[in-house]
Length: 170
Image (tube, rainbow, N blue to C red; front, side):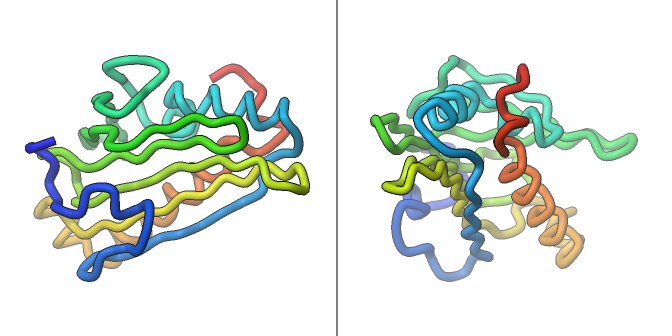
């Protein structure tokens, strides 16, 4: 994990560090065991990022701690590499998720965590938690536009597993 571009590895699992922009959004995406299990399978296969519009290559599927995730995002004629390393992954009966951190070449510096929970009411809740700051010259220069784009992508991530649409092929 020496090549991560930030020091606060794992901080999306607790108090978010100062000096970064913070995001914490959640959404109910389904109901019941079948919805939870399907969403978990898709989450660990990289479907959230693919369905949000990124090209995704993972060093292994399903992902686990240590998996390298190489994403590319196309915006018109521009292609942005988005390299990440999974720093945490866990799958239990009623909760699962993973977090990845930024590697050199990523437009941002920080970490993003994707979690699913099957709560006591049967709702499947998808939560995204992140902290980030600009990591490249164009994200520094882009300032508010880059932050708005990041918020847009987080909302797209949240919508990718909405029931009933998440049962479609990835």
